[in-house]
Length: 210
Image (cartoon, rainbow, N blue to C red; front, side, top):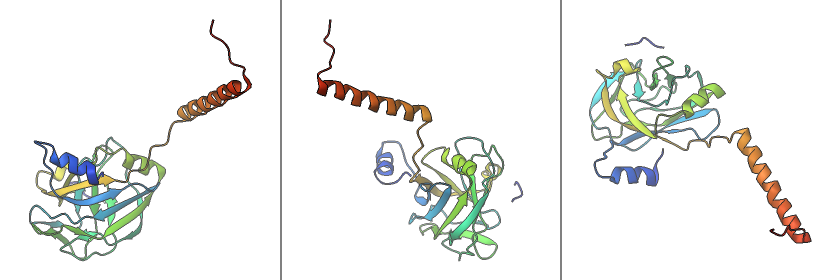
């Protein structure tokens, strides 16, 4: 072990209804709708198994990132996120094993050294919000998908062989990607041409076809 340190609604329902596609319960959601901010929210999903691990290792969101990037330096705004079986210590932290690991780790959130989930019961409670830099925020937006697996007692991909899969996370409320400058210029040019064409028609200055 490396030493440390959605889309919801109709879309999720439609995916779950497709033949041959099955998803575990959604245990937490990730909100990226606010610039330079990430919020983790516990969802009412039930854990698929009874499992335990270490608070110093935490949970791992597999394939959260879509590409290699940087360490997610983050400043906690507020947070009482924890496993439902434990009380929160109000100090959750984010971590990424290295620039190529595509998973996001959440750790140091429970009172005491241990964390656990119970099969058939809600897995997490509370929420947590962090502010991040532009570079870290862009990395978070690179998302590998709209949902993925959650492993308990893992903080890097190297831990998955011994970690426990307890359910899924979903990424929702993703901020819109700004249009590139070239697209904005093109849009402005089209508006100008449309107004110019209307002005010609209104004054009768319209060229006749040959």
